Image 1: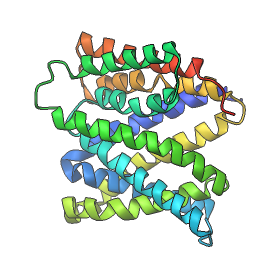
Image 2: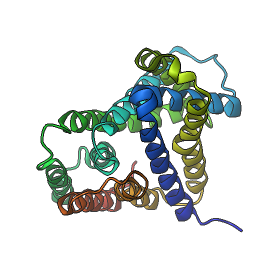
Image 3: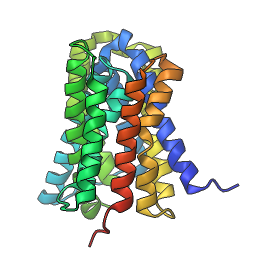
Amino acid sequence: MTVPPPAQVLAGILSVQIGAALAKQLFGAVGSAGAVALRLFFAALVLLVVWRPALRLDRRTWAVVAAYGVVLGAMNLFFYIALAQAPLGIVVTIEFLGPLAVAIAGSRRLLDGLWALLAGGGVVLLTENRGETHLAGILFALAAAACWASYILLSAALGRRTSDGKGLALGMTLAALLVAPVGFVDTGVALFQPWVLAAGLGVALLSSVVPYSLELEALRTIPPKVFGVLMSLEPAVAAIVGLLVLGEVLGPAQWVAILLVVTASVGATRMARPQT
């Protein structure tokens, strides 16, 4: 039985958010830095085994790989720190401003300005009446959004200079090497408990390996614009997973805010002009 490409994309989105929820449940034992260190370490290990990338690259390619790895590590670290201080649905929605900004950047069309205003209004609603408790979480989520925008641009450059998943494997390895010391300093030997390592492997598979494989397969047949529209559902999926798995209840204003950001992302993706 062949799984339809849209179902593969949605399964990948669900896998990512369940992985994030599982990681958040690890925070009590290893903290946010420890959880992200485990995710990146195991993801890098699996990708290295699968792709076996060569280290003989020219200087410019190594520069792209290095930039990609740094941004990937920072994006994950900022996301997990934000996740420790705010609900999953709110963090993912704010982080989604990164790809949305890339989608409408440089556009002079009035409609794209409308999508930007719609997304901005959604973020205002998300942060309304949250108090200072989640201020740091919101700021770290915005930092993760900026990293995500850079990640998208660097992914394109990486794809032009490397083949298959070899560049991803090298970039993930560099990200793991950069973040692992932070996780160890923050967590110590608790990071090496067998159950923690097993949970970390699960997070890596759910958050990186499984969704990457599903998205790669779906993109073989699905138009990029349709893929982008489906990915726009990620904030809503995150909010639902946060509710069902973590018990994170959002208020009506927060749900409206998520709907606004999803609508803005769908609109910007559907109306985007083809790249030339």
